[in-house]
Length: 77
Image 1 (cartoon, rainbow, N blue to C red):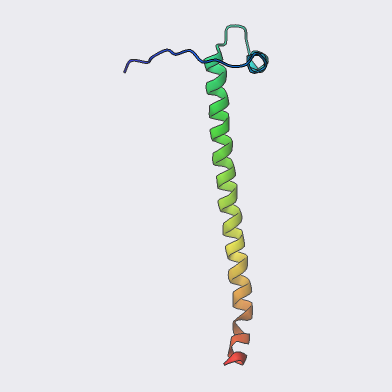
Image 2 (cartoon, rainbow, N blue to C red):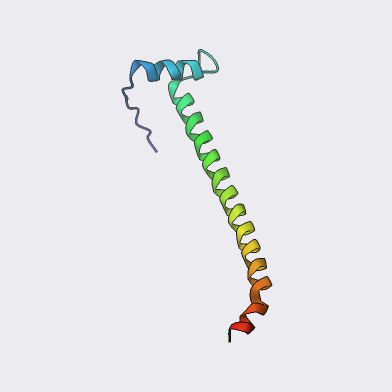
């Protein structure tokens, strides 16, 4: 697979932020951007997993509450 090199334009303040994020002078902007993208993806997956765990807990709590109220259903019939 041939990887095409392209040029992007960013404002000077964005370039300055990227410069500050470099861990060394030899690190490229591409490496900084890839590192940021990987970190963002990792955080997204972590948030999704946290949401799943919370929903599981809520579902468990909801089932518990529903079971506690089951005897009252007989009174309504």
